[in-house]
Image (cartoon, rainbow, N blue to C red; front, side, top):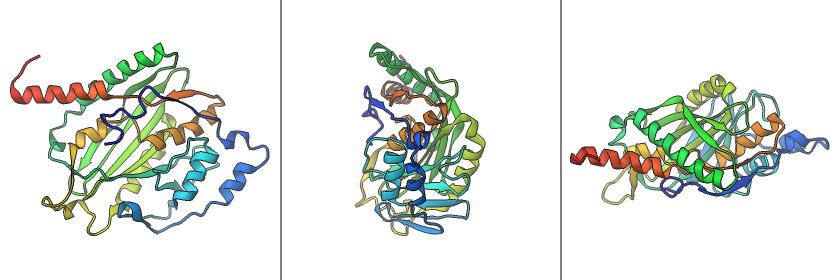
Length: 298
């Protein structure tokens, strides 16, 4: 798992330049947006063996156009792992209140959902918060601001029938008056999982939550790549379960950095941010579960 126990970009600080939308005196941002090729309806995501069946409320950008938005429009570092982006038809990318969903795929193997019904989400959140506190102590020593996990903006929910998981976190960046929303969807498949990640301001929670719930049934794996197609004799199995998908990383790498750039542009400020490692808290969570199972008391 690339951004779970390894600690997604831990101790690394990234400078986010102000996105082009905030500095579009020459019209370059508008020209870039006007040149994007939006797709609608049935959209194949071949690299993941998945597809979207988008309703009229969404449009899709392929990898090349997504990278233009992330890297040229929003000022993010180059990233070849993104597969595409789902964008609401309204508001459009250049309008206030805009948000987008970055699509990535992790070929980590079949993720067992045997632990899903047993997850104590309150305990998981507590340990995630402890992990962020420990990470923030190191960030402050290095001279950088804090990024605090405030709590669930939307509590985790796993749809066992459709093998889809979603949750949202509320984040607080030091020096910023408004909190940030990080909304995640994971769709489990035979060989890995599809990640749909949206980041916005907390004041946009109602529209983002409505949109993500609309998008949820529009996303699925193709026949042969679905969760139900798993062959235990031949298929790779991931070394973690559903709990690690929630607790293993604060946000999908590109999704958080991408939209955060747009939020900061709206605030009119330049901010240095770094991704948070939740390793310590997550390890405590799983250690406690193992201890309870074995009858060990610490």
